[in-house]
Image (cartoon, rainbow, N blue to C red; front, side, top):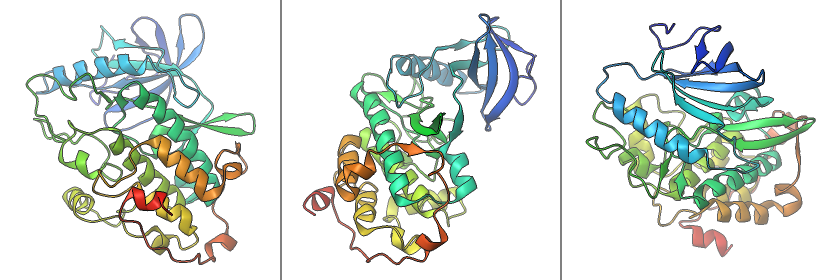
Length: 336
Protein backbone atom coordinates (compact mmCIF):
# COMPACT_ATOMS: atom_id res chain seq x y z
CA UNK A 1 0.00 0.00 0.00
CA UNK A 2 1.27 3.49 -0.90
CA UNK A 3 1.62 6.05 1.87
CA UNK A 4 0.45 9.62 1.39
CA UNK A 5 4.01 10.84 0.79
CA UNK A 6 4.45 8.39 -2.07
CA UNK A 7 6.88 6.10 -0.25
CA UNK A 8 6.17 2.37 -0.37
CA UNK A 9 6.91 0.64 2.94
CA UNK A 10 9.39 -2.25 3.05
CA UNK A 11 7.51 -5.49 2.51
CA UNK A 12 5.59 -4.08 -0.45
CA UNK A 13 5.79 -5.71 -3.86
CA UNK A 14 6.30 -3.82 -7.11
CA UNK A 15 4.93 -5.16 -10.40
CA UNK A 16 4.42 -8.52 -8.63
CA UNK A 17 8.12 -9.14 -9.24
CA UNK A 18 10.15 -7.15 -6.74
CA UNK A 19 9.88 -7.37 -2.97
CA UNK A 20 11.08 -4.20 -1.21
CA UNK A 21 13.39 -5.10 1.67
CA UNK A 22 14.74 -1.79 2.97
CA UNK A 23 15.11 1.87 2.02
CA UNK A 24 18.60 2.86 0.88
CA UNK A 25 17.95 6.56 0.34
CA UNK A 26 15.94 9.06 -1.62
CA UNK A 27 14.59 12.58 -1.88
CA UNK A 28 11.36 14.54 -2.21
CA UNK A 29 10.08 12.72 -5.28
CA UNK A 30 11.96 9.41 -5.33
CA UNK A 31 13.04 6.57 -3.06
CA UNK A 32 15.71 3.92 -3.60
CA UNK A 33 15.23 0.45 -2.10
CA UNK A 34 17.12 -2.75 -1.75
CA UNK A 35 14.75 -5.24 -3.36
CA UNK A 36 14.69 -8.93 -4.18
CA UNK A 37 13.35 -10.12 -7.51
CA UNK A 38 11.42 -13.34 -8.12
CA UNK A 39 14.66 -15.20 -8.86
CA UNK A 40 15.99 -14.31 -5.41
CA UNK A 41 18.60 -11.80 -6.65
CA UNK A 42 19.09 -8.51 -4.84
CA UNK A 43 18.67 -5.34 -6.92
CA UNK A 44 18.34 -1.59 -6.39
CA UNK A 45 14.85 -0.36 -7.20
CA UNK A 46 14.05 3.35 -7.52
CA UNK A 47 10.49 4.64 -7.40
CA UNK A 48 9.31 8.03 -8.63
CA UNK A 49 6.11 9.39 -7.15
CA UNK A 50 3.69 11.14 -9.51
CA UNK A 51 0.60 12.19 -7.52
CA UNK A 52 -2.61 11.14 -9.24
CA UNK A 53 -4.44 14.06 -10.75
CA UNK A 54 -1.44 16.42 -10.80
CA UNK A 55 -1.47 18.78 -13.76
CA UNK A 56 1.69 17.36 -15.29
CA UNK A 57 1.28 13.70 -14.29
CA UNK A 58 0.98 12.38 -17.82
CA UNK A 59 3.94 14.45 -19.02
CA UNK A 60 6.14 13.11 -16.25
CA UNK A 61 5.08 9.51 -16.79
CA UNK A 62 5.68 9.74 -20.54
CA UNK A 63 9.09 11.37 -20.08
CA UNK A 64 10.16 8.84 -17.47
CA UNK A 65 9.21 5.86 -19.62
CA UNK A 66 10.72 7.30 -22.80
CA UNK A 67 14.02 8.39 -21.33
CA UNK A 68 14.46 5.35 -19.09
CA UNK A 69 13.97 3.24 -22.20
CA UNK A 70 16.81 5.21 -23.79
CA UNK A 71 19.03 4.75 -20.74
CA UNK A 72 18.36 1.02 -20.85
CA UNK A 73 20.25 0.90 -24.17
CA UNK A 74 23.45 2.18 -22.55
CA UNK A 75 26.13 -0.39 -21.80
CA UNK A 76 29.40 1.01 -20.49
CA UNK A 77 31.72 0.26 -17.54
CA UNK A 78 31.18 3.80 -16.21
CA UNK A 79 27.37 3.83 -16.45
CA UNK A 80 24.98 2.14 -14.00
CA UNK A 81 22.73 0.03 -16.26
CA UNK A 82 18.94 0.03 -16.10
CA UNK A 83 17.72 -3.57 -15.93
CA UNK A 84 13.98 -3.02 -15.94
CA UNK A 85 11.43 -0.21 -15.66
CA UNK A 86 7.70 0.41 -15.76
CA UNK A 87 4.61 1.48 -13.83
CA UNK A 88 3.42 -0.61 -10.91
CA UNK A 89 -0.25 -1.37 -11.73
CA UNK A 90 -1.32 -1.54 -8.09
CA UNK A 91 0.01 1.86 -6.97
CA UNK A 92 0.74 3.76 -10.18
CA UNK A 93 4.31 4.31 -8.97
CA UNK A 94 6.98 4.60 -11.65
CA UNK A 95 9.99 2.38 -11.03
CA UNK A 96 13.34 1.44 -12.49
CA UNK A 97 15.63 -1.39 -11.50
CA UNK A 98 19.43 -1.35 -11.40
CA UNK A 99 22.14 -3.69 -10.12
CA UNK A 100 22.71 -3.44 -6.40
CA UNK A 101 26.25 -2.09 -6.29
CA UNK A 102 28.54 -1.80 -3.30
CA UNK A 103 29.72 1.71 -2.54
CA UNK A 104 28.29 5.21 -2.22
CA UNK A 105 27.59 8.22 -4.38
CA UNK A 106 30.01 11.12 -4.58
CA UNK A 107 27.67 13.41 -2.64
CA UNK A 108 27.89 11.06 0.35
CA UNK A 109 31.69 10.99 0.04
CA UNK A 110 31.95 14.79 -0.11
CA UNK A 111 29.58 15.21 2.82
CA UNK A 112 31.97 13.07 4.83
CA UNK A 113 35.36 14.34 3.61
CA UNK A 114 34.55 17.89 2.37
CA UNK A 115 37.20 17.93 -0.39
CA UNK A 116 39.49 15.30 -1.88
CA UNK A 117 43.07 15.57 -3.07
CA UNK A 118 43.27 17.18 -6.54
CA UNK A 119 44.93 14.15 -8.15
CA UNK A 120 42.16 11.89 -6.82
CA UNK A 121 39.47 14.27 -8.07
CA UNK A 122 41.01 14.33 -11.56
CA UNK A 123 41.15 10.52 -11.77
CA UNK A 124 37.53 10.19 -10.62
CA UNK A 125 36.21 12.77 -13.06
CA UNK A 126 38.07 11.36 -16.04
CA UNK A 127 36.11 8.15 -15.42
CA UNK A 128 32.89 10.19 -15.21
CA UNK A 129 33.79 11.80 -18.55
CA UNK A 130 34.00 8.35 -20.09
CA UNK A 131 30.56 7.34 -18.80
CA UNK A 132 28.90 10.55 -19.95
CA UNK A 133 30.70 10.29 -23.27
CA UNK A 134 29.01 6.94 -23.88
CA UNK A 135 25.61 8.56 -23.33
CA UNK A 136 26.45 11.49 -25.58
CA UNK A 137 27.57 9.11 -28.32
CA UNK A 138 24.01 7.71 -28.24
CA UNK A 139 22.54 11.21 -28.47
CA UNK A 140 21.51 11.26 -24.80
CA UNK A 141 22.04 14.39 -22.68
CA UNK A 142 21.82 13.67 -18.94
CA UNK A 143 20.70 17.15 -17.73
CA UNK A 144 21.23 16.40 -14.03
CA UNK A 145 24.94 15.78 -13.59
CA UNK A 146 25.84 16.28 -9.94
CA UNK A 147 27.78 14.41 -7.22
CA UNK A 148 24.78 12.34 -6.10
CA UNK A 149 24.44 10.98 -9.65
CA UNK A 150 28.05 9.81 -9.76
CA UNK A 151 28.16 6.44 -7.99
CA UNK A 152 31.49 5.27 -6.58
CA UNK A 153 31.36 1.51 -6.90
CA UNK A 154 33.69 -0.34 -4.55
CA UNK A 155 35.36 -3.30 -6.24
CA UNK A 156 37.61 -4.80 -3.63
CA UNK A 157 39.92 -1.92 -2.67
CA UNK A 158 39.31 -0.04 -5.95
CA UNK A 159 36.74 2.66 -6.81
CA UNK A 160 34.98 2.83 -10.18
CA UNK A 161 32.85 5.85 -11.08
CA UNK A 162 29.50 5.04 -12.68
CA UNK A 163 27.07 7.68 -13.95
CA UNK A 164 23.52 7.02 -12.82
CA UNK A 165 19.97 8.42 -12.82
CA UNK A 166 19.00 9.43 -16.34
CA UNK A 167 15.54 10.46 -15.13
CA UNK A 168 15.84 13.96 -16.63
CA UNK A 169 17.71 12.88 -19.75
CA UNK A 170 16.73 13.94 -23.23
CA UNK A 171 17.61 12.57 -26.63
CA UNK A 172 18.53 14.65 -29.66
CA UNK A 173 15.84 12.63 -31.44
CA UNK A 174 13.10 13.39 -28.91
CA UNK A 175 11.63 16.57 -27.40
CA UNK A 176 12.62 17.30 -23.84
CA UNK A 177 9.02 17.53 -22.70
CA UNK A 178 5.72 16.07 -23.75
CA UNK A 179 3.12 17.61 -26.05
CA UNK A 180 1.28 20.56 -24.57
CA UNK A 181 3.86 21.31 -21.87
CA UNK A 182 6.03 24.39 -21.65
CA UNK A 183 9.40 24.10 -23.45
CA UNK A 184 11.31 25.76 -20.62
CA UNK A 185 13.29 24.85 -17.51
CA UNK A 186 10.10 25.66 -15.60
CA UNK A 187 7.21 23.52 -16.78
CA UNK A 188 3.57 24.49 -16.67
CA UNK A 189 3.49 23.59 -12.98
CA UNK A 190 6.66 25.52 -12.19
CA UNK A 191 8.99 22.55 -11.73
CA UNK A 192 12.64 23.34 -12.30
CA UNK A 193 14.44 20.67 -14.33
CA UNK A 194 17.85 19.91 -12.92
CA UNK A 195 19.61 20.70 -9.63
CA UNK A 196 20.15 24.46 -9.22
CA UNK A 197 23.66 24.36 -7.72
CA UNK A 198 24.96 22.33 -10.69
CA UNK A 199 22.71 23.34 -13.59
CA UNK A 200 24.20 25.16 -16.58
CA UNK A 201 23.23 28.79 -17.33
CA UNK A 202 21.42 27.78 -20.51
CA UNK A 203 19.44 25.05 -18.72
CA UNK A 204 18.46 27.51 -15.99
CA UNK A 205 16.74 29.48 -18.76
CA UNK A 206 15.41 26.62 -20.92
CA UNK A 207 15.76 22.88 -20.48
CA UNK A 208 14.59 22.13 -24.01
CA UNK A 209 17.53 23.24 -26.14
CA UNK A 210 20.48 22.03 -24.08
CA UNK A 211 23.22 19.81 -25.49
CA UNK A 212 26.34 18.00 -24.27
CA UNK A 213 27.88 21.27 -23.11
CA UNK A 214 25.29 21.48 -20.36
CA UNK A 215 26.51 18.13 -19.00
CA UNK A 216 30.09 19.41 -19.29
CA UNK A 217 29.09 22.32 -17.04
CA UNK A 218 27.43 20.03 -14.49
CA UNK A 219 30.45 17.75 -14.41
CA UNK A 220 32.85 20.68 -14.00
CA UNK A 221 30.73 22.14 -11.18
CA UNK A 222 30.77 18.75 -9.48
CA UNK A 223 34.55 18.73 -9.82
CA UNK A 224 34.72 22.27 -8.39
CA UNK A 225 32.79 20.87 -5.39
CA UNK A 226 35.12 17.87 -5.02
CA UNK A 227 38.22 20.10 -5.17
CA UNK A 228 37.03 22.88 -2.86
CA UNK A 229 34.38 21.35 -0.62
CA UNK A 230 31.35 23.16 -2.11
CA UNK A 231 29.86 24.12 -5.48
CA UNK A 232 30.80 27.56 -6.77
CA UNK A 233 27.62 29.39 -5.76
CA UNK A 234 27.03 27.67 -2.42
CA UNK A 235 26.92 31.07 -0.70
CA UNK A 236 23.61 31.93 -2.42
CA UNK A 237 20.65 30.93 -0.26
CA UNK A 238 17.62 31.63 -2.43
CA UNK A 239 16.53 29.77 -5.55
CA UNK A 240 16.00 32.87 -7.66
CA UNK A 241 19.24 34.40 -6.40
CA UNK A 242 21.08 31.26 -7.43
CA UNK A 243 19.57 31.28 -10.93
CA UNK A 244 20.55 34.97 -11.25
CA UNK A 245 24.14 34.26 -10.21
CA UNK A 246 24.52 31.29 -12.57
CA UNK A 247 23.16 33.21 -15.54
CA UNK A 248 24.86 36.55 -14.93
CA UNK A 249 28.39 35.89 -13.64
CA UNK A 250 31.24 33.46 -13.98
CA UNK A 251 32.01 31.03 -11.17
CA UNK A 252 34.20 32.54 -8.42
CA UNK A 253 37.86 31.60 -8.79
CA UNK A 254 38.34 28.16 -7.27
CA UNK A 255 41.71 29.20 -5.86
CA UNK A 256 39.87 31.68 -3.62
CA UNK A 257 38.06 28.78 -1.97
CA UNK A 258 40.84 26.21 -2.36
CA UNK A 259 44.21 27.95 -2.90
CA UNK A 260 45.96 24.58 -3.01
CA UNK A 261 44.37 23.64 -6.35
CA UNK A 262 47.11 23.59 -9.02
CA UNK A 263 46.75 26.33 -11.65
CA UNK A 264 46.63 23.84 -14.52
CA UNK A 265 43.60 22.10 -13.02
CA UNK A 266 41.92 25.39 -12.09
CA UNK A 267 42.14 26.65 -15.66
CA UNK A 268 40.56 23.48 -17.06
CA UNK A 269 37.71 23.46 -14.54
CA UNK A 270 36.84 27.11 -15.13
CA UNK A 271 36.96 26.79 -18.92
CA UNK A 272 34.38 24.01 -18.58
CA UNK A 273 32.25 26.35 -16.43
CA UNK A 274 32.12 29.34 -18.77
CA UNK A 275 28.65 30.88 -18.97
CA UNK A 276 28.80 31.28 -22.73
CA UNK A 277 28.51 27.75 -24.05
CA UNK A 278 30.15 28.62 -27.38
CA UNK A 279 33.29 29.46 -25.36
CA UNK A 280 32.99 26.49 -22.99
CA UNK A 281 34.64 23.08 -23.32
CA UNK A 282 32.51 21.40 -26.01
CA UNK A 283 32.70 17.73 -25.04
CA UNK A 284 33.51 15.48 -22.10
CA UNK A 285 36.16 13.81 -24.26
CA UNK A 286 38.01 17.12 -24.60
CA UNK A 287 37.59 17.74 -20.88
CA UNK A 288 39.19 14.38 -20.10
CA UNK A 289 42.08 15.06 -22.48
CA UNK A 290 42.67 18.47 -20.89
CA UNK A 291 42.80 16.85 -17.46
CA UNK A 292 45.27 14.31 -18.87
CA UNK A 293 47.45 17.19 -19.99
CA UNK A 294 47.09 19.11 -16.72
CA UNK A 295 48.26 16.25 -14.51
CA UNK A 296 49.80 13.62 -16.79
CA UNK A 297 48.13 10.36 -17.78
CA UNK A 298 49.89 8.50 -14.98
CA UNK A 299 47.73 10.56 -12.58
CA UNK A 300 44.51 11.12 -14.53
CA UNK A 301 44.12 7.51 -15.67
CA UNK A 302 45.36 5.80 -12.54
CA UNK A 303 43.34 3.35 -10.48
CA UNK A 304 41.56 5.08 -7.58
CA UNK A 305 41.58 3.20 -4.28
CA UNK A 306 39.19 3.41 -1.36
CA UNK A 307 42.05 4.53 0.83
CA UNK A 308 42.81 7.49 -1.44
CA UNK A 309 39.21 8.81 -1.16
CA UNK A 310 40.01 10.66 2.03
CA UNK A 311 39.88 14.33 3.01
CA UNK A 312 42.44 16.67 1.48
CA UNK A 313 45.22 16.68 4.04
CA UNK A 314 45.97 19.51 6.45
CA UNK A 315 49.40 19.80 4.83
CA UNK A 316 47.87 20.25 1.38
CA UNK A 317 45.40 22.85 2.66
CA UNK A 318 48.32 25.04 3.75
CA UNK A 319 49.70 25.11 0.19
CA UNK A 320 49.27 28.30 -1.83
CA UNK A 321 49.60 27.29 -5.47
CA UNK A 322 50.60 29.94 -8.02
CA UNK A 323 47.58 32.08 -8.84
CA UNK A 324 46.37 31.52 -12.40
CA UNK A 325 44.55 33.82 -14.77
CA UNK A 326 41.39 32.16 -16.02
CA UNK A 327 40.98 31.60 -19.74
CA UNK A 328 38.12 33.43 -21.52
CA UNK A 329 37.54 30.48 -23.82
CA UNK A 330 38.28 26.78 -24.17
CA UNK A 331 40.58 27.49 -27.13
CA UNK A 332 42.79 29.59 -24.85
CA UNK A 333 43.17 26.57 -22.56
CA UNK A 334 44.18 24.40 -25.48
CA UNK A 335 46.79 26.93 -26.50
CA UNK A 336 48.20 26.82 -22.99
